[in-house]
Structure formats: structure tokens, C-alpha cells
Length: 211
Image (tube, rainbow, N blue to C red; front, side):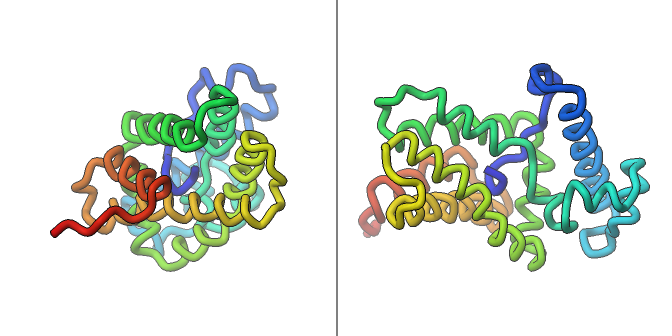
């Protein structure tokens, strides 16, 4: 899920794809890498699409073809479809929250192991840049639709039912808060522990207040 991960697409991930799709992913990756480098050098607001295109060695129109807005470069990655794959690989009779805990723990582990600096940068931008935060809220529905389908497949429910939609977006909203909380507290907390705390709230509700 975009709000939680920043995993790289590796050559192993690309091996089963056709040449055209591999080229698309590599272009998106180059654009994202150029964007992150420029933001580190001069800040988000000072970074323009023209600069990103020059650094990535593509045209501005190519940048916009892959990412409709500059905010989308920060927020999107190749990982959402992989998460859905992981969910579908889990045993059909496994309790849903156990599946979610397994998949999200794996996703966080990949993000921390492979791209910690990028994960922190993206999290920081989500908190500090209003345009990024606003766009994140808009794009949550895309991840929500994919997750809705996965939940519907697991539970046998209608993916368009009100109950499934509310449950799904509650999960998406809760998971996005983990990253924001992490950034707001200067990344001091263990992200895996924050995930466990969030999933416990989703599963059992608010715990009793400590005296």
C-alpha cells in the first residue's frame, strides 16, 4: 500500500514481465529516483517537472504520461499489485486479520530493508507538504478498490456492498495514519511495532486507557 511502503521493483520481480512492461517500470523508477534526488538537494517546492525530466533523461511529457501530477511521483510505486498477490496466496481459511498482519509485516520489512531513506522521505513529505497529503487522500481510493476486491474474494461478499467498502477504507485510513504518526515523531518508533498496534486497534477496538 502506497502509504506504507517504498519497496523497489527488483530485476527478479521483472523477470516474468514482457519487454514493454519492464521498460515502463524502469522509466517510472528512473523518474522517481530523479525526483527523490532533487527533493533532497533543493526541497519539494523548488523541484519542477522539467528538472525531473532532465535528471531522468526523459521528456516532461513522458513524466506526465506516467505521473499525472508531481505528487503522484512521490506517492505511487509498483507495490500495491504485489500486496494483492500476497493476500491471494494466503490460505483461504486463514482469519482475515492474520492475513493482513502477515502481508503488511512483510511489506514494512521490505520497505525498511531496501529503501529506508526513501520511505522516510515520502513519509516526511506526506506530513509536511499539503499538496502531497491532499493527493494521498485522493489516491487512497485506488488502493481501496484493489483491497476491496481482495476482501470480497476472501469473505464471499459483494465488493460493492456498503459494509465491505466501509471496512476497506477504514483499514486504508488506519494504515496511512501509521506512516504519518511515524514521521510526526521523527521516526523514533519502530515501524513494525506501530503496525502491530494499529492492527490490534482495527481488530479489537480501542484498548483501555492506562492509569
